[in-house]
Image (cartoon, rainbow, N blue to C red; front, side, top):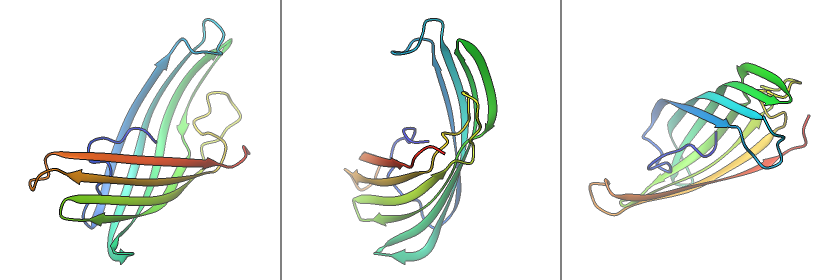
Length: 161
């Protein structure tokens, strides 16, 4: 679920197993290119599981992650289509580095078309996608309570299946 990370999004936690839940709501009834009286409502809860290992790779901590979104879509474009289901599964690996005043992360993973169906309100996107992540956080003080963080993501989609 790109675009929903928050403060210090580029900081990798210490070794351990973590869970993050992302709740997202999207609601629109006007958009360029859509006919009048169209609407879309999407509610999603993305379950993200993160395992940071004790293993060092390239001077950073090796980690693995998986994201499984649960999606409910209510789409009206002429006809109404409403669907609830599991979205596309994401699996990936990451490396996190820690300095005295900075942290950085690099990651790569694959979104798989596991949530695909043939209806317009499909909970998945219907294609495989490579997602690359690169980010960093700079801490302005020793307490690390004042920081600047940036996280970038680049996605490369395969052809639709």
